[in-house]
Length: 180
Image 1 (cartoon, rainbow, N blue to C red):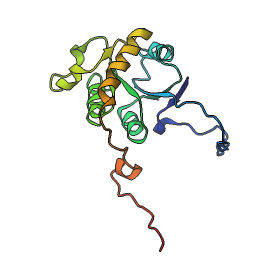
Image 2: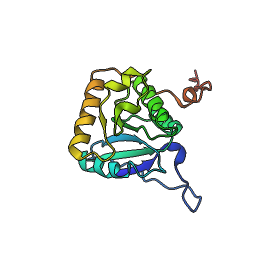
Image 3: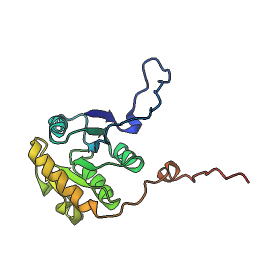
Image 4: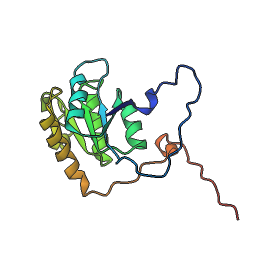
């Protein structure tokens, strides 16, 4: 299992130097792992057990931890995830998590809500009531079935390409012209 922070929160190495990455060599490579975006309030201990349960429910998983709406939207716009788990405790709770879940659903991401009750969902977003949900202390079977339910809805859908970095930030994208 690999756990890392969303792109905006990455820390630089303590030395401040660039890290040397070894080039990929020919030969057998490991199969691509299952990638999950876990968006929750990092200050609350509500979803701490959930991250440990995810690694028991899904083999070869990479969990990307996003502690704000902006971090989660940036990660989802620049990377592809097999499932997005959105906790309704995301600030400002519960509207922050509901807004993030709505935006992820609108961009065709498979979403699982993390909440103890659906009563926290705003009534003006009926699509969220149809999403699978799990409590923060869910077991491996509940997690597996919720992820399977979320991904089965999106498997047959054609997903749009991820936007280029300039499109995400609202800036024009510069493309190199081919020389003739």
